[in-house]
Length: 435
Image (tube, rainbow, N blue to C red):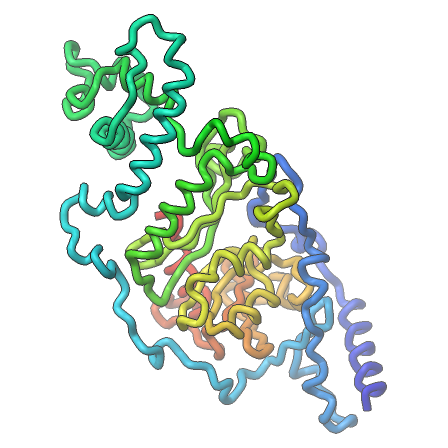
């Protein structure tokens, strides 16, 4: 029986290979990230473990012709054309609702400064003061006057951080400090120049530290993020401690603009900043609220901080705090794959994502727009995933995958565009990180 099944599949593949295939349309139309360091994963490595699901048909009568009922991926992944009658999936309307939002003592905070103190708490402020004063002590002898290099304290550090936040909120961070602190030509901001002098602000900007510089060399030998690791982990822990996420989350990347010296600085020409630090973010769709972060530091030295940079491993690390909570995660085609979708589903989490056309699990019929009517859709089902190929315009195809949807539903609100519900759901929930 197995030999007959293999021979039958080989015959189907020969017929598919003989069909005319538009190579020009197979190229990616999505943005590519050009990074300073090579990622350790490759597409072939990432997908070599995807299971070839042909065993479902071993018990079928050998004389039955199933070519009209299935699609085959390049790696022989079988996608059925008919939606499963009952996949046993718990849908959103059956999920036990847990009210998202602030939790614990965060529910009692109403003033902006009180809310900020949840994330930059007394412990974190104390560490910043301690490490900054260590730096000041190491350079104090270079100043003729003692008052020019005096130690800092809690009030001054909070004022300093407040100036940085104010400059960002008012979008004047690109202005010179002389303009921001000016109180004569009326170009300055009262709440800034009344907090501290421009000279003191520049001094603190040079000396502020987030780790003990006397011990950094040992820690940096095993961790590229040694200068910020302790404070970063504490702030991230506070993010998760005081908030209950909703059932809809977004996973995406950010490029934080930075052109200084850094071994893992990235160059991504498609981003507005082009140069900066790449950060992966898991964000609540509805608030939006940052729930988890990971800084891409390239290949870490051997030691406890050396983690895999394969996309599958990055996704699983990022979503770890919300697994088995019946949440859905929306992600773009950089993160998504059949392997990731199945792993998330096995851990009580669904996924809705766009998919690159060169993924080996995607059938050839889903990759091409030619010959398909505009605003038409093809659906394939491979438990627990639903794959859709939508043609929004001539010579353009959009491929999406979902473990939340298990039918061929079309969103009636899209009118003549006849967009699948998978596509409209993705469009509605993909912007959490951008917000």
